[in-house]
Every structure is written in C-alpha cells, then in structure tokens.
Amino acid sequence: MRSPEIVLKVVGVCRTTNFLTQLHSLTIRTYDTHLAAKITELYFELLPLQTVRKLFDEIPHPNLYTCNRILQRFCGKNRYEEVSSLFTSMFSFEKVDHFTLLFALKACSALKATNFGKTIHGLGKKYGMIHSNMFLGSGLIDMYSKCGNMDDAFRAFEEYSKPDIVLWTTVVTGYEKNFKPDEALAVFTGMAMAHCISSDPITLVTVVSACTQLLNLKAGKSVHANVFRMGYEGSLSLSNALLNLYAKSGSMFYAGNWFRVMEEKDVISWSCIISCCAHNDATDRAISLFDEMIYKGIEPNSVSVISALQACESCCNLDKGRQIHELAFHKSLEHDKLVSTALIDMYMSCCSPQEAIIVFDRMPSKDPVSWFALLCGCVKNGMANKSIQIFCDMMARDIQPDATVMVKILGACSELGVLQLTSCLHSYVIRGGFISNSFIELQLLTVMQNVVAWMRLSRFLRDQQIKMLLSGAPYSTVCPNKVTFLSILAACSHAGFVEEGIEFFNIMLNEYQLMPESKHYAIIVDLLGRIGELDKAMCLINQMQSRVGVHVWGALLGACRIHQNAEIGEVAARNLLQLDPDHAGYYILLSNVYAVDGKWDDAAELRGSIKERELKKITGQSVFRL
DNA sequence: CTAGGGTTAG
Image 1 (cartoon, protein in one colour):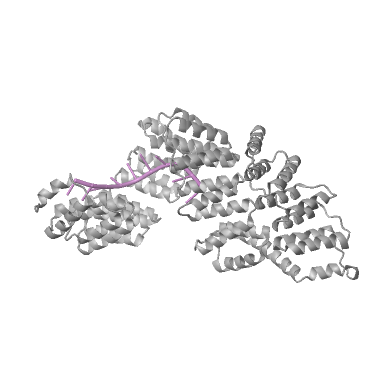
Image 2 (cartoon, rainbow, N blue to C red):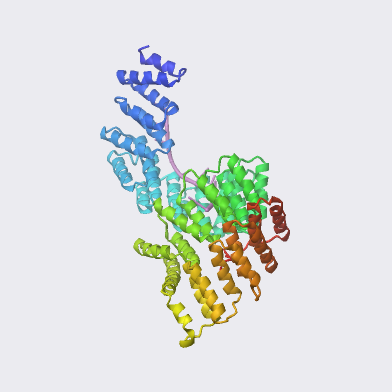
C-alpha cells in the first residue's frame, strides 16, 4: 500500500482516526497533492478543528484548491480567525485566486476588519480580478457594508459599469442593514427606473424591510401589488417580510388578514404573528397562536419561544411562562442566550425573581444583556441590595455597564440608600465619562442629582446635627412638624440608617407628641423589615391609630418576601388586596409567598382569581415607593 | 472539483 492512487480508493471505505494518522504521514512523505486534498476533507469530518489546522500546516506544498477548500470549511464553521491567518500564509506564497479572496472577504466581514478588507480589495485590483468577476464585487460590497462602511461599499459598487441584480441588491441591503432605509429605497428606485433592471424576490425582501424600518405602509403595499403582478407570491420569505411589515407598521388587523391567506407558513411566519399579538395587547391570542403552532407540528425555535414568553410577561401569566420554559428545556433551547434572557425578563415581570435568578445561574455563558435583564428585574422587584450585588459582580467580571445600566443601578441606590456604594458609583460615573446620548445623559444627571441630595442630607444626619437641634427644641427656634419628620425619616431610609430612623420616630412620638401618619409608619415598617424585625413591624402596625395605608402593607409584604415569612406576608397581602382589589401584582406577590411556603393549592386558587378578574398587570409600579 | 444578495428576536 504505497501508491497514493490505491490509498485514495481505500479512503472511501475505511475512516478511522488510526488510518488517518497513517495517511497523514504518507501525505507528508509523498508530497501528493490529490492525497492532500482528500485528506483535508477527512480531517474536517473526523478531527477537532484545532487539530485540523495543526495537521494541515504539516502538509508540504498543498495546492491552491486544497487551500481554498480548507478556507471554505473554516468559513462554514465560523472560524474566521483561522481563515484570516491561513490567508496571510497563503498570500506569502503568492497563491491566491478569486475564490481565496472571497473567503478572506467573508472573514473580514465577520471580524469587522475593514483595513484587511481594503488590502484584499487592492489585491483584487492588482491582479485584475475585479471586473471579470461579479462574485468578487458583491463580496466586496457586502464586506464594506457589514463593516458599517457604506461609503466604500458604494464606491466599490461604482467600479462596475454594468452591475447585475445581485450587486444592486447587495447595495440596497447594505443601506437597509446600516439603518439607512431612505438610501436603500432610493437605490432601489434608481435601479428600477433609471436602469430598468427588474427586481427578483430577494431584492423585494430587502425593499420590504426598508419600508418596515420607515413604517411606510403605503410604499410597502405598492411593493405587495408588484409581488402579485410579477408572480412572486410563492416566495415564502417575501410573504414573511410583508407579514412583518404589516405587523410592525400597520395593525394586527392587516397582519392577521395576510397571515390567514398566506398559502405556506413556516416557523418565521408564526413567530412574526405571535410577536405582533404579544406587543399589541393581544397576549391571550399570542399564547393561543403559540399553542396552535405546536399543535400543528411546527417545530418551535428560539424566536417563537421568546415571543411567546414576552406574551406571558406582559399579561403576568406565570403558569404559562413556566410551561413554555419546560418546552424550551425539552427542545434544548434553554441555554440559548436570548431565550434565557427572555425567561429572566418573564420571571422578573411575573414577580418571581427567585426563578429568574435560577435561570441566570444555569446559563453556561452570560452575555451583558442577560446581566442587564437580571439587574433591571431586581430593581423592578424592589431588591435593591441584590441589584447592587449584581452590579459589583459585573464589575468584578469586567463587564462594562452602559449608561442605561448606570441609570438603573443609581435608581436602586437612591431608593434603598446605600451611601458608600452610591459615592463609589458617583465617582465611577464621572471617571467613566458616560456621555453617549443626550437622553441618557439627562436621565443620568437627574438620578445623580437625587442621589447627591440624599447623600448631603445623610451626612448631615450622621453628624447628628439634626438630632441635637431637635432635642434642644425648647431652646431653639426650630419647630418641627410632621412633614419635617417625614423628610428626616425618608432620609434615614435612603441612607440605610435603620437605628437612627427608629430613634427619630421615637423623638417625634415622645418629645413632640406628634401623631405619626400612615406614611411615617410605612418608612418605619420598611426600616424594621430590612433588619428582619418583622414581628416588631407587625406589632407597630397593630398599634396604629390612623388608617393603615397601602404603603405600610406594601413595605411589610416586601420585607416578608425577602425574609421568606409566609405567615406575616399573607396578612400583609390580604390587607393590600382589600385596599386595592384590582392590583394584579399583589395577587402574584401573595401567590409567591404561598409557593415559598409550599401552599400550592392556595397559590393555584389565587392565580385562578386573577384570571377570573382578567386583571392587567400594572408595570413598573413599586409598592415600596413613599 | 470551490463562489455573490433575503425574512422573525434581547
């Protein structure tokens, strides 16, 4: 078995790694190019990618075809670093053709390496490949647009005197993908009118996308008319693009009608209509469409699962959300970053932060958006301490928060009052120079002002100047009233001065004989709750002579959830429901309290009563606000 | 023997 021809015949039958090793050494010894080509194909089938590259480098003088094939295979596996380094070594041997350049351009697009791309562009010109080859042209335009450089993309396009439909489409797509839908439509119009080039379904998909970005229903409808005129109604992607246009810019009515008459529907069509319903207050319809899709045997993908989860999120349907979570688990979609993030959002919005945290912890790799979802969810659920802990974890892992995250975390700080961290963040914001967009900047400044104001007042409190002033009241000109004490208590709450707050409360009561109102009690209950003194808080509420308001019970319930006290939590929630029976959030909170305690029947019964009343969740409203 | 443009989503 020494002749490469014989070996090549055997390769088709025998595919063991052991045999491969023998072939490898034979290839090195014989310098046979056919064998080298064949063996590289085998490497990809049988070996891990790192090994492939190593072994390939040992093959002496592989021919151009073999090199191109290995570039192609690496492109197919999204291993663009390898493509780029292989290209560089090929170039040093002056062995490149237009296939090589095309694969290298793909790598440039993926790696966003414009300069490398420009070098390849220059090479193509130098070798005179550009004008003889349309493929290279679309590759170049595509590379520049994917690097976000539309000026160079258009210049590359202009190098062609007679561009074909693919080149035109690549330019239109470039503008559309770079959020320049006006330019996209302008180029498309020029193509159809001035150059009389008739479009194909693929061009129209991009044109419809541009109309969607512009929310230009009129233009989209005229494209739709053309679709029928040209007989393209059989194109599923085009139908889906139109469906998306109606879903985004028209109404559920248009989208629903078009969806109904579409001859063929795939998972994209279903996801599109589900997402449309979920975002247009038709959450029940979104969920039933999702069920129908599953029933019809359409395999759900991450996008459809995400849309269905968003529907559960906006109608606070925790049970259905859990059910979809289970489905996602069985379809191995749970570890998809986007699905995990949607699950975190769903659990957080359904007031079940514990489950959200479990999902987050299970994620094999976390991306910044999932951290963000977790952080925002904790803030939304009044878990300021946890959100600050998350923020610190993010910093420790070198995950750079953007301005939006900073706004959230500062909000959490000013709500719960964590003085030390706030001043830390203050300097972080200044050092980080968060000036990205003016809207965020304004928001950031507003929160900062609040935080800084609280910090000043807290320092004042800590110096005990106020206490001295108040204690010496008979001799001073200050005559504090209930409102004065309300601000002092609020400052203690924000600063996290639990003991001082209670002390001031007693001064108010005993030295000034001022009758505290519901709002004063709410702060004290919150302060007691933070140190876990739930019984004391409950005692205090029982002693109250004024009406016990929503804030008081809300503060107690929040504390019960954090300290997992079902007994007192139930009392708090029942009272809250009596005061405001239409607030779905209380039902959810209470059912969570039950669930923690293992009272599943009570939890289920409660969820039933939510459905009966068809309550809408009131989003973003904290029961702890003063 | 290898090659270009497209739809849903955080």
